[in-house]
Length: 475
Image 1 (cartoon, rainbow, N blue to C red):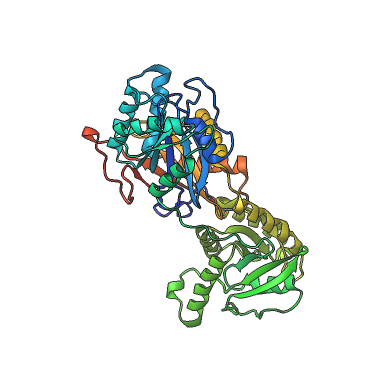
Image 2 (image 1 turned 90 degrees about the vertical axis):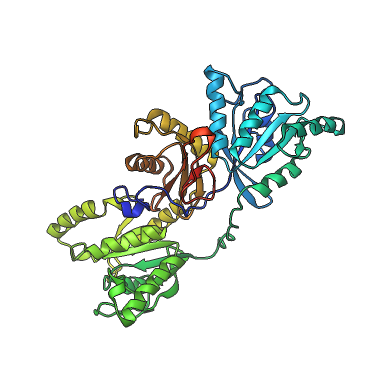
């Protein structure tokens, strides 16, 4: 994502209401009731540290999980106790933060011990939260212990689901209940056929050589080429072989700056260009280096980034440059395209075929960055170290905290930060820059948004979340 351009970062306040994010389920309960064991059972692997002593888990740790096609983020927490101080109080505070951040809560109680004062205190807090709660009666390893689970009805949290994190007994019914109360995530589109050619849109302002480049790649005259600007008015799909593999190239009409002012065929040509970007996975923005970079060139780049497509910058007619023009061109690129310095760059000549083969590694690099997905656990481990080394700046006398993060989507990569306050633009750009440095994302825009926890009002009430259906978070 561009580093200094608000237009390329979404809404100026950094809060995006349209980003789809997986529901969050917080696993809470007093110490040593088997929360981490249950988390391991749900995610199907031993990731959460488990030991038969209380207080092993101290931080919030997030994991990707799914059940019956319903995906969600599972947040393991430390033991939640009320009225404690010191380290135990910090751990309890972390658990309470996680509960406030969640869309649903999995409340774990040790059925063999029964209801304790600590369980009842946590239950009171959860009831006030208004969040849907699923009560898991853990350590019910057989039918003899099921009677112990029934006694947990007196917590007032609804039906207790008898489960055994150790053996997996009853976890299916419990997860059915969790899936029923979390917001439904839209079904993912089926993955593209791995053998299908990747889709590339050739875009740029009129008469920069897009059709000439396609003809050069194809090795024959597939589309009309003429010196008159705007010859191409239809998006033309061509499957061609480049670098030993097939690609689907979409040759488009030139993008013009103010398409609303265009008339007739030119207007519809620009509309079709936008549609071509929608169908593409990566866009090659072609620029004519024999002329100074124009505002229209920058607008084309911005349109590609806003569309969320991977990006390659191709500078055409490079063979026509003399030393003086090359010097000034580099200055123009540094000044006007610094916002997309993450995009691969190729210097080519569509008319002679010079260095056209270099498009292949550039396209592969951009598509790899566009496809990249980071697991929730790895992302939060990285984020914890980053924030510890460079905390968010104080705003309004208070320092916002980042509770946890998740990658909501790939193609393009979209990240959501769950915070206790607003993160300044500079700090979000810092996080984006470090994401690129540590995980790559070469050639792909990054979308970084926030979910900010609303402050509690007097009497424990919460302010209505602006632009959100959830009670205590705004996007």
